[in-house]
Structure formats: structure tokens, C-alpha cells
Length: 433
Image 1: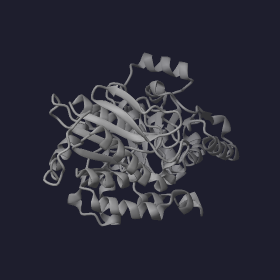
Image 2: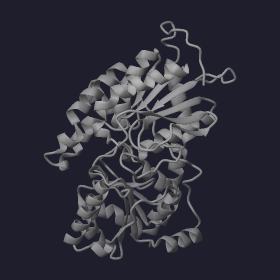
Image 3: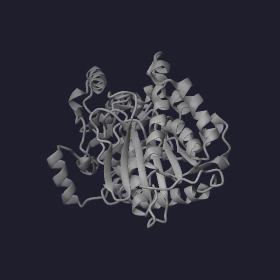
């Protein structure tokens, strides 16, 4: 993938599940924070002068390529048939992906300096691709099977069948042992990679995710009032956005609403959940029944899928943003909300709460404890001074700590440590794009 006028390097990024695209359909199955993460990182790599192929799965009627700019394209490799495959069922098709990708790479005469894989399915494939091409493999897990199994006990007796925890953890262990390096997105994740998988700390570097600093910004009060009127929000509304998945804790947030109403009688939940699939609709119906059983249905607003261009205004319109997950490796939506100046309450079941200063940048609580979580949601709505501090300092913190360009530079510096490490083993292949 080289170019004689391109001195920086050629990068291969793998993210093979979900709907990966130049303009991703966020909210569709398996298409959320990870897709945003990988796409934004790839864009910054390209902006900094690298040639980037972001490789994913081709299915349905998707085109082979999305050319995002002269340095970046999304390249779709067909495998596993034409239908969507959820990430838990991807394991049986990974060998075909590796074979098909390598065949195309050889046919096109492409050459890469580093492969950076995202999530364990791409990690398994990325390790084999790296060994075949004799290049370094840097893996970003995004989430850990061991942690998810511990925090998904509420999934019921079919949890192992649905999520394939045992198989996933075994494959993760081999990926972590065999890849050249691991990028963890939180300190807690790095610690669990050491404790649960026996990986030495010097094999792991912690680099946080980032946000689009141009999109997610605070707005002036008159602009917020205008957005609230247009979207039907009130200052006492709690906003939550996410996939219709068990680990997102939507049921936990609903269960906390009766306690919140005792503290803030006008409170409502604005829930941008799901993307309209049959599975999403079934889960939403279950949560609606929960609201009815608690007698709070009229306090729930089901907004469904929110278009990406509307996301920032939805954050700004809320009185408080809630990240209520049972399990959350990081919580990109919370950082985006903070960047928009919205007071935010995050879950303690994830790494983000360790990065913030409580009462200065954001608040945190255990969503599995309804009274505790409700109390934290109520505080910014009851105390204007706290609300203002969280709004101002949260936005500053998010912008300074999680801007994508800075994160891309840190990631590239890590890549540079490994580039060329297998040069003596590599066959001389003419580079091309």
C-alpha cells in the first residue's frame, strides 16, 4: 500500500463485525462505540500522512470500498455469506476472512507496515495475517470476555450459549500472548489483562479513546433552550443512548426512576435505544413492561435511533446524561456528553469512573443500586452550582484528555516501536496502492 511520495507508512486496521462504513449506521446491531473509535482513529492517521486501509466484512449489498479521502478507505472483504452475522457467531468464519483477505492482498501487491486489530474476532484474524505478512500486530481488545462474563450474570442460564464466553476467553488469551503489543483503553482493562490472562504489564500500553472535538462542544444558553423546544426535552430530563443490549443497563436506569422522582418530581427518561431490528424491538417491549410494572410509563420517552448529525444536540438538550451499563469498557457516549457541557453520571462498572474527578468532571454510582444511582442523577438538577461546575469542567476535561489527534499521535508512536521488527524475515514485495 506504499506510495513513493508517501514517507510515513501504510497501516492496516481490522474491525470486522457490525456495519463499518465511511458514514456508519450507528445503533444497528454490533455498531456503536467501537466503530466510532476505529473510524475516527483511522481518519486522524490519514490526516497525519499515513495510508490506511480499514478492513471489515462485506455482506448484503455493501460496496467493496468506501473511499473516505486520498489516504483512507474502508475495504470490505466478503466471507460468511450475504447475511449479517452477530459478533458472537463470527468465530466460525474467521479462517475464510483470513484466506480471502490474503488472497486479495497478494493479488493487488499490497504491503503494510503494521496491523492494528480491534476486538477479539479481528484479533484472531489479525494475528494470522501478521504472521503471514511478517509484520507487527498491535491489538486493541475494546472489551474483555473475562470481565463481561463476571458482569453479565443477569443474562440468565443461556448466557454462555449466547455470548460464548469460554471460547472467547481462550482465543483472547492466545491473541494477547502472541501479538506484539496490546492497547488497553482504560487502566482497569490493563489491570484485568494482567490478572485474568496472565499478560505482563510491559506487554500492554493504556491509550484512551477520543472524541471529535469539533462536533461535541457546549452551546450557549439560548441555543440550548431552542434545542430543548425542538426536541421536546426539559431541564429535568435524563438522557441515555445506546444499543438495545443487556449490558447497557437500560432496565437498571428505568428501575432507578421511582427513587429519582422522589427527589426530582418532574424527572423523565429520554431513551435513544436500539435501531429498529426485531431483537431491539423485543428488548424495548420488555423494558416498557418494566416501566408499566413500576407505574412510571408516562415518565419514559422512547426516542429510538438518533441520527449521528443530531447526536450532539440530544446531549446538549438533557439535564443529565446517564451511562448506566452493567459492563462498559470505557463509555464513549459519556465523554461526548461531557464535551457538550451536559452533567454526566457514569457507571462504576467500567474504567471511565477511575479517570474522572468526582464532583469536578462528572459523578459516578452503581446502577445496580437504584437509590444510589438516582441520588447522583438528582444532584445536578437540584443544585445549580454543581450543575455549572460539572458542565464547565466536564467539557474542559473531555476536550483536553480525549481529542482524537493527540490520541492518534500516541498510537502512532507505539506503532513506530515495532515497525520493521520483522524486516529481516520479510520477502521483498513491491509496495503498491
